[in-house]
Amino acid sequence: MRKLISLFVVLVIGAGLLAWFEKDRTVRVRANQTQSGSSRPELEYLKAVNSPAPPKDPQLLFLLMGAYANANQQVEGAEFLSARLNEFGPRLSDPQKALYLSAIGLLRAQRASSVSLFHRIGYVKDTITTLDQAKRLSGGQIFVVNWISGVVRSQIPSFFHQRQAAQDDLTWCAGNIAKAPNIGWLREVDFRLGTLALADGNQAKAQDYLRQSGFKSFDKPVVLTTPFSEDTLSGHAFVSPRIAEIIPGRVYALSGFEFTEYYFVVSEERRELIGIDAGTRADSAKTAYEALRAYAPDLPPLTTIFITHSHWDHIGGQAYFRGLNPRPRFYARSNYQEEIAGELDAPGSIAKHFFGEHFNVEDVRNFKPDATIDRPTELKIGGTRIELIPVHGGETHDAMFIHLPDLGVLFVGDFIMPYLGAPFAVEGDMQGLLDAIDLVVQKNPRYMLHGHEPLTRNFSSPAMLAQLKIDLGWLRDQVLAAIRRGDARARIHRANLIPPGLLTGRPDVLLPYLILREHVIDRLYHQNVGYWQGDLEGLDHLADSDRAELFVDYLGLSEKRLVAAAEQMAGDGKYELAASLLKSSEARFGPTESIIKVKRLVYLKLMEKYQNTDPFKYILYSSKIGAQTPAMAASK
Image (cartoon, rainbow, N blue to C red; front, side):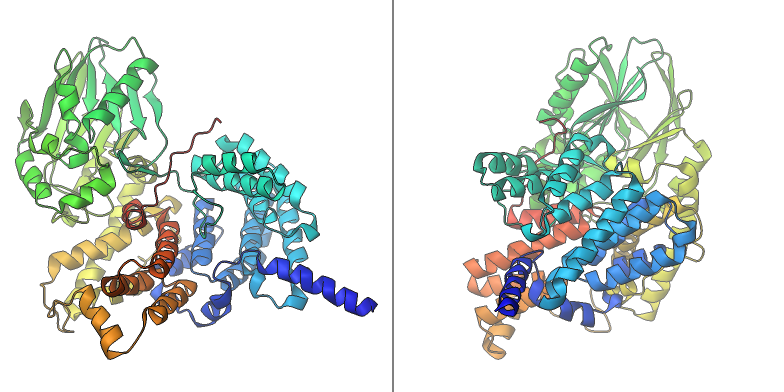
């Protein structure tokens, strides 16, 4: 009888554990056994980056952890990081060891449901021990270590008595959000505190935490730590609204008020205010400018606005500034109309996903500067020396750098936008980008301020850009050689192109190169091939309905079979493939309940996959399922 009772206890505990990290449970083992690394160039790159030595930027370690988790390759990920921990151990500080152990603990936890029932209790206890060791080594003061500990422990069955430890870790994170990589990590903290409150029967508290997390229900299959936010009316913002003084009292940066940045400079004589770019919409321009005036009420009147380039999100707010008294004088490149004409020919529906329903394309169409620049020009405004430097390329041919030599500030707009132009427009100039980098290196500013917050954060150093230029030149040569060989675009991506010396060179180049690599390949490919290829690509004009006809009428697949296939692809981490299948299925069967359900899972996983490296993909994937992401606030 005692043996039977013991067996019953094990089975009950095991049943509880089956719900722990249940997502993709039924296919995880198969995915780990069959997935080919060659189809995941981002994962292979991050493995290569983390192999020679401990990364100087811990973000690269956690990007690798996230890539393994998103691909449902937790077993391989835990083994890889454990091997690196053993290899690098003598060189690691205690905090570094804590980061490795935390990443291993999280990946182990996500694998728990695939461990055999009779080994699972010991496996969970070992995972808890790993998390405990990480916390001891970190001294309890590293945000990511506590965050992982709290998130994992909050999902462990009550039998293991981890509830209070989870509560303590998560509460510490909520009170120390300033130590987090970004405020987006608070989403999961609030969500997990909500699940603990729900388990305690406190419905009101649970719903309050859920609302603060930005999630709509306690049924979510992804972890989002991004600072990005999305709103149907106002569009995408890269960070929560904030005002920073780049140079106290002289240069102000306004981030998170909408899609783009606003910059303002107080002139040397402090009698004039100079703006850099005009934003996307009149309403957001008004909100940002009024926030600045409230923040620094003694600012002089705005007299001048320089436009770094004439994209939607840099001139769309001009109508508001035109209405100010006195009316500021606008400067732009003399070829601004060519850029506006090109972007107005781009798909109009795309703009709403990025800039929101309040975006008014007429404010772009009607833009006309008061003065135009066609050559390097020096001005003096309010005693401040300003150099206007035309740039041919990177993103647009109407780009202009605004250099304040006495302040050591260079406003560079979007010249190094990773997409080499908007992905849905015909633009981008690779050689122009490389030439513009030379200009940045020549000027060598103390502060290099871009048109979007992630660009300023990732492309911050002229010295780093000098090395990145060499690596991008190598990448261009490799891509063009592959195109001449007739390689398909997918094959070029899967080659995992890594320049010689990159892995052992400047550590601050590693992430920027990854962010750019995919898009450099795509832009060069489309600029250098026609619409027919030797492998017959481009010869047909098949639509989703045609592919649905293949699946249903010729292969005899039902909606149920197609949905099951998409679910299996998702379990294998092949989300793009699943999304393609679902598009075809929906073209035939419509948005049925089963298609909508798996479609939501697939696009959420794609959002999770690209939340740290590709905001444009994040925006488009979220738009497909209406997954708005509210902005996070540090104070509650």
